[in-house]
Image 1 (cartoon, helix red, strand yellow):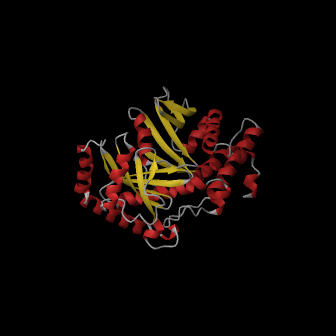
Image 2 (spheres, rainbow, N blue to C red; image 1 turned 135 degrees about the vertical axis):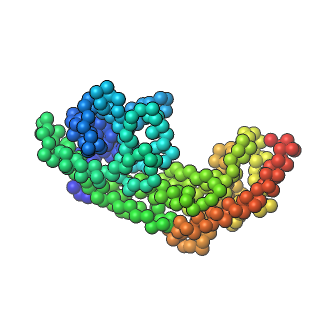
Image 3 (cartoon, one colour; image 1 turned 45 degrees about the vertical axis):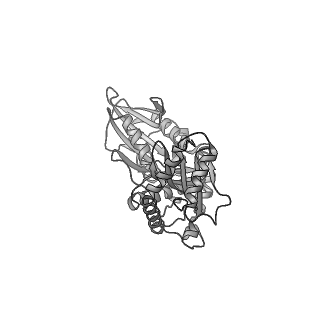
Length: 346
């Protein structure tokens, strides 16, 4: 740990971790294209290799690293670099769809262990990248001693970081007990995001009759479990931090009073927002005008002292129970909203 903190490469990388590593690999590819390509495609032999970083395709997609290869630059290598964050399957699928009419190889370069990836994507860990860099560059001919120093320092940095990072899936909600070494290396977020991605994948396999999406906000995993979503309303469960949220999202924009009136009736008729009265400081919490929710602390659902003692299986079982009750009540829920529609309250 002491050695890595003395490294100029490591300290420069702290300015912007993912961008720094993408920029360094792009620089490496521009000076040593054949050797750098071997890091990602060790069994291939191409000519006319060109590395680019922060490549924009269309109006919205920017790729960390893109390599064109072949006599007519007809082949592509797309590298998504995720050192401090973690992509969703949906994000990677969108990226590969951009190249659906081209001959392209897709690699996710990540500090985190491999999880579910779309079939078009290959996984490369920073640990494996360090090993390949040793193989390719330990006996390479450098243009000058400065290049040699930079590359050797970079290899040492990613070697130390990848060896220090240990991800363990305990099947419990102990995401926020981040190992000390990861905090010291400023890698807290990737640990939490990775554990959240594993939990979201577990829920996708073990929770029925819903759509599940995961994201990351303000240092916490957010998992949305959408039960119903249409042009009139959205009902969902949301897990964020230690909160189990029952959410109601009316689709109309006006009349704040009537949105809460519907939510209040759902609560009092025990159609939604179950078991939350004791733990909410106010009747309803809100995001903006259309996101109304109440919550209960997850650990209290299971009479546990701490969130980290709650297991994936316990929570999945409880979510299935809530979903079952929701659909048993759905006719009454929909009728309630229709009643307000007929009264022209929105």
